[in-house]
Image (cartoon, rainbow, N blue to C red; front, side, top):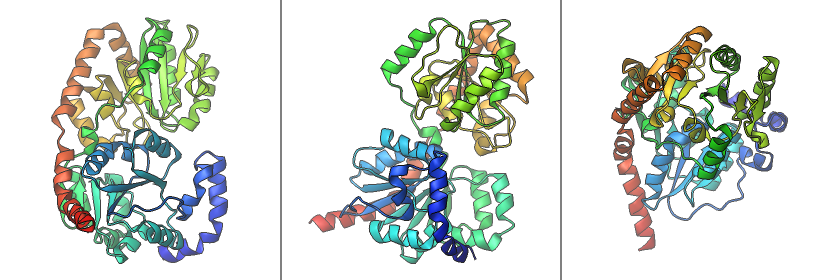
Amino acid sequence: MYRLLSAAARPFVPILLARRAKRGKEHRQRLSERRGENGIARPEDPLVWLHGASVGELASVLPLIDRICARGINMLVTTGTVTSGGLAEQRLPRGVIHQFVPIDIPRFVRRFFDHWRPDLALFVESDMWPNLVIEASARGIPMVLVNARLSENSFARWRRLPNSIAALLQRLDLCLAGSSPDAARLSELGASNVIVTGNLKIDVPPPPVEPTALATLRDAIVDRPVIAATSTHDGEESLVLEAHSRLRRNFPDLLTLIAPRHPERGAHVAELAAAAGLSPALRSRGELPKRPTNIYVADTVGELGLFYRLAPAVFIGGSLIRHGGQNPIEAAKLRCAIVHGPHVWNFAEVYAALDGAHGAEPVNGVDRLTAHFAAWLSDPDACARVAEAGSKVVENMGGGLDRTLASLDPYLMQLQLRQRARHA
């Protein structure tokens, strides 16, 4: 039924793409890629195709991409969001091809495979579109799910359609799960050959920083106390602004950095700040925080490493609303004291370890959020102890990258042998 409906939807794609482009959700100059059209030639040697939905998925596999490329294997990377395209331009190794993934309509998918003819397909976490998977299977392309995860909520939804999810999972050659609970849920839904390799996001190096940008912001901030709220969602920024307003009574020079999960929401966050009687500045407009600035809206892509180096205490968003929580690992690696809401099932194992070691603190609303920030602003040594504990937790949880590569080695070795034979 899905395949029939997706095929019937093809005439409406131009309308969909135009609307998404108008809202900033598509790259206007690269809409043809969403129809499976490609202006880049396929490399002659074997090609590994890796697909990750958005920024988080792509960031988590950058070290994996580096290691595969180091073996002399060509790579095609596809993503589905504008922000992930920006990250790809900044961080992918030289020679790796980036394309936006085609919309999951049979004709577009066939066009994509006719051109690229990948020799191995790697899907990151859980972003498996039915037509992509079925077409790859029909063409005999080995498929591996890497850093596989399946939250309790997603598991409950898929259990209502057991035959559908089983039909996809059973086509995978290998499923490399990020944790034991993920592996158990995937196996119950029909995945075979499931191996727990660990969370790749833990092995990602701390996000980089441009030294000039860091020096410029530090000069602008001078000696002001700083806190941050990163990867925030709608409904969370208002709570952060309320916490800031309360904290100003004891810390009148406080500067709060807010990095919304979707940078295009930056102007809206600035409007919320102004409506709360605060003075915002927007980084996307090239503005720097001046002395009267209360809220610095960090609405850019690929700069979390900059903001984590400026703020000793950070609220990680997606957790005070029922979203499942955003990634705390980068903040922990850069020795930030972390505070988060109760809804963190996307990273349940990591948050549980952080909370258990007092490397992060859970809160359930603006009162506790304010209290933790106030305590850490008043006692920098206590803040540093929490940050150090969090850093040690993520350091001890590593190793997923090496285990993932070991599981992929038979596939990669086969491609290398074919490549050598071709050039012999």
